[in-house]
Length: 173
Picture 1 (cartoon, rainbow, N blue to C red):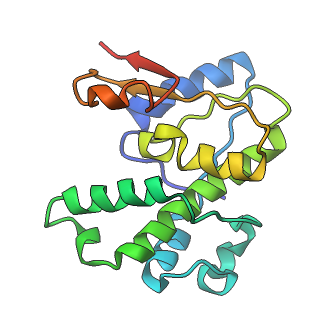
Picture 2 (tube, helix red, strand yellow):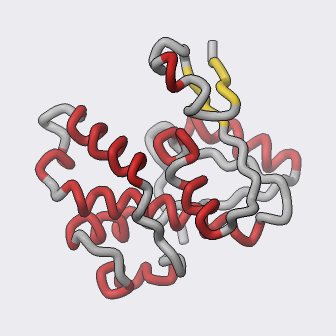
């Protein structure tokens, strides 16, 4: 299945993809189609019926019980500018769509858990070992996961969060 690249693909993802290609390193696309996440957001429900033709991406388990993740998600919605289209939508549906994305990305990694994986995603999907790491850990409690965070500066992270947000913080110059 083809999907249009994100607007930041050229700068943020393409160099890594090209490096993987030249080294013969496998690359997978892990996200659920946007239309499936949008359907979940609108219906405020995760089910094969809601997702329709994209139900083949639906993992066996979607864990909606991460309280800290839900709190962080709701805070991020409140902090969004008022003109953002998501502002007028049902926040519970938006949260379920976010968790669906995490669960699908986690499920796409499950066949690779016998090797080391470098998985690149937006920071909200992995900060504080929530999102994708949470979904993986719930399904595979013995799995060892190290999280990285790429940041332009540490000042954006409160001091109390710097040691919790990730195992490694990479500062870009």
